[in-house]
Amino acid sequence: MSILSAPKNLTRNVLIGMALGVLIASLFHYHLNSSALFIFVEKYLFNLGGQVFKNLLMLVVVPLVFFSLVSGISSLSNMVKLGSIATKTIGLYLFTTGLAVTTALIFGWVFNLSGYEGEVASFTPVAGEASLYDTVLRIFPNNIFGAFVENNMLGIVFVSILFGIALNLTDELTGGMSKSFERLNTVFLKIVLLIMSFAPVGVFCLMGSYVMAKGLNIFGDLAQYVVLLIFVLLFHLTVTYSLMLKFFANLNPFIFFQKMRNVALFAFSTSSSAATIPVTLKTVTDDLGVKKDVSSFVIPVGATINMDGTAIMQGLATMFIASTVGVDLTLTQYAQIVLLAIITSIGTAAVPSAGTVTLALILGSVGLPLDAIGLILAVDRILDMIRTSVNVCGDATVSCIVAKSENELEEKIFNKLG
Image (cartoon, rainbow, N blue to C red):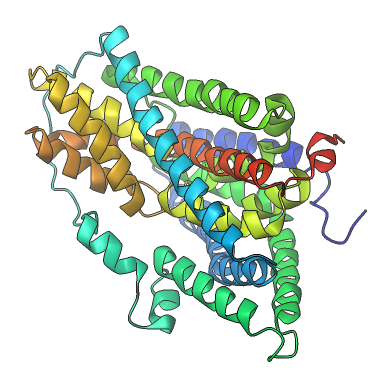
């Protein structure tokens, strides 16, 4: 067993952790919710444990993205290839996002998604940097260290690419400094594996924290919206990505999803594409056979701009809210929703529930009330977990397709099971 191998029986242990978290938290939520023990367990076991686990994952995101990108780019023998990789990556991400929101609108129309008939509570959307101007500006930070401190992923990716190109062009003058970045990248991958060893406990706490606060009832009057959204998310995950893998890269989707199960579980539990970057990078490189000069670019960029799950939510949520307030959307407005979902996906932060900020922008553009977002938030937590799983699987799908087109995919590794 390699020193960089994933912990043994990780998937089984994570699933056990999830099940135990839900079971124990349900017991407290429904039977011991007025006791002092409830408050202690919720705060110091589930909330604290879950936050520590997420903090540990976020701890390595920035250095891993930086060292991975720099080492990948600096090792490229042909810098023209970077432009080719970037063009294909961004094009595919925008294509899948457009496809995702279009699929959502089609299914919403086919199943005649109806609105909520109860009273809509008042809601004030949180201000966010969702405008195109702010998004472009964040790509080019005026302070290198500020981008890292602020966790500005767009800025970090730009700085890393710039540094990697410079290192590539001056590697001989610096005495092969690129090798040092490769070694540092290996060290941070090992840190990821050490953190993954505690994943079952972390997932136990994260799932317990949610159930302690909300219980198991996520349906109620929003059942049609919830069920349809889950269906479209799973359809996009299993059907759309499978077809893309088969037709664009001639790869076996069953092998792909089998190897991505740990990543999907991590994404589900953390609800953050950014927090899942370390696990995604390792899986895509070591298990799917994507060479690091592709994976180190595609995965961080994907965590920043690939928001297929969020686009699906925005499409269905807009239809749901329009039906709630009795507004019939026109064909032009549907096209506007698709276009805005693609544009705002680039500016949506890779953190839990960030899509609600950009949903406010889309609702405002088609003349729908922002108050109704409160309905979506009532059931958004569990749905956000599923959306994140879809997003990270989309990142890995695009990585495989780009790698295959650039002859940077080791298919023996991809096809190897066990």
